[in-house]
Image 1 (tube, rainbow, N blue to C red):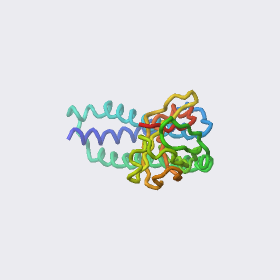
Image 2 (tube, rainbow, N blue to C red; image 1 turned 180 degrees about the vertical axis):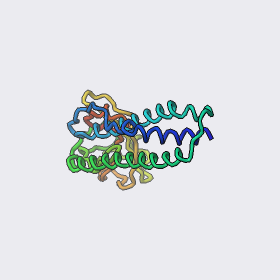
Image 3 (cartoon, rainbow, N blue to C red; image 1 turned 45 degrees about the vertical axis):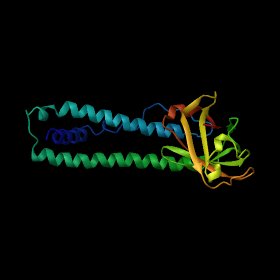
Image 4 (tube, rainbow, N blue to C red; image 1 turned 30 degrees about the vertical axis):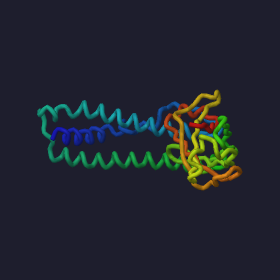
Length: 225
């Protein structure tokens, strides 16, 4: 029961303080544009910041205003329940509006990023060569890169599954100083042949989990595991 009361009062409080609950609209601090990704890191950063501020303000409002109801000093009235429903609907609408704005900004940016080349480098022993990557899609949390590859050593340990028709590949994302961003990525493809000289395209999805790190995003490095 206390949980229900807390939820109801949270909705009421955020309705009263709606300009504070989710109304911040951004951090006021923008990340620099990246040479390849443009403002994509900043868009993702601003949206994430807005969500985090909203959650913090909601929690603070809950704690401050639900205490009389949790302690039993006051009991929610029918009017409180009605207000809670109205404010909850308005709150959800504002969240939906903010999300729609974010998606629209991503869609607006996408044409300027599609087709952009991303340099690649190879660790010795990966067993294949790769051309420069090309951005083929951009989403709300990252982007997809297509890379052309050619098998150069089908017997390399890193390609041990190739004989079964599965081409495994692993990569790192590097910044301009050569430092790794995030953790290693990995994926597989069954579209390539099994012999030396076989060619094809592979896709890499790169998630922007920490937008600040992608301000200096520079290239992809294929590695052996």
